[in-house]
Amino acid sequence: MNEVAKVIPLHGTGSGRGVSSRRRADQNRADQNRADLSQAEESRNRHPSSYAESRPPTPIVPSTGALPLPATTEPNALDAVKASLVEQIAGAAEFVRRRLSGDYTVDEFGYDPHFADALWLPLLRPLFDKWFRVEIKGIENIPNDGGALLVANHAGVIPVDALMTSVAVRDHHPTHRPLRMLAADMAFEMPGVGTIARKAGHTLACNPDAERLLRMGELAAVFPEGFKGIGKPFSERYKLQRFGRGGFVSAALRTGAPIIPCSIVGSEEIYPKIGDITPLARLMGMPYFPVTPFFPHFGPLGLIPLPSKWYIEFGKPIYTDSYDAQASEDPMVLFELTDHVRETIQHTLYRLLAQRRNVYLG
Image (cartoon, rainbow, N blue to C red):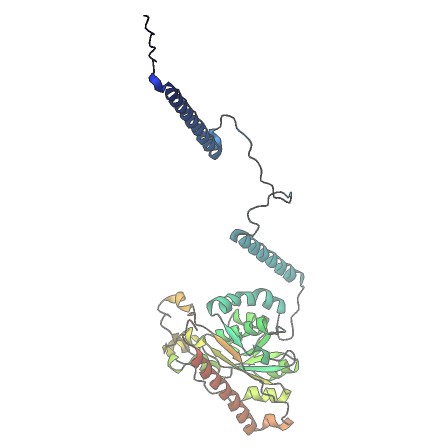
């Protein structure tokens, strides 16, 4: 009897599973290859330099179809400096042109508005705005037109307070009125200083000149303390000295001009006067030769004013047009008005000082 031969499979009964395992392994390797290719493609997208062939970048066009705008259109600091420099050069060229062509006017006192506005006041404004940081109150009390007499306290060794007051009125008054100061004779006797003072609009502190200015409808300023005020020691700061015999009141009464009290805080601290070399002052023909913590020890550096915080307040007008014609000759009227103006300024100084927290910070 024949026996049926048994066929033994080479891979056993699980051959189907073996084929499936190989297929899965092949599929895994293919997937891994595709993943590697995808990663390489992403790497090339991130680093365009890895391409064998360069491709131009695709421009990003806004949805409106307009061309891309620059990242910023605001001028930088260099452009601002260039613009400022061009403006200054143009202004200087225009100033020279007008001076050479004679396209400017000078009044009977020597006031040259073109010189004052184009050259003199621009030199003072950095001190006013940046160094002393002057704050102004009551500018509306100065009339918009017509003659008026501004009366202020005086201090600081050098009359810087008069210069800062002129900037305050010219720049901050609604009608930008020029301030015509009445200065001492000595200012006009100094070489160079007298010429600049005349061109800036100032004149002698005498009744005839004061009355002429007021009748012309000008805004004049007087500092009745004179050298006693600017030369007083630091220990007496903000204590008003005598206001003289009331000559400024007489000028106001004769012309019917209102008197504007003006109180200045900050000027006393720019050059603290702690001493006076009298023999040297007499030798040089000066009312005093000041000694401060920095002058004359540090030479020219001692002339740099300290950056105190300033306040200038213009008070309510004191009207004089109600007095009769003989009032300007009456000693009692002159004394009463002079004392009234002085007390108004002194009380305002005390109030401003009480509000000030720090000499240099305000």
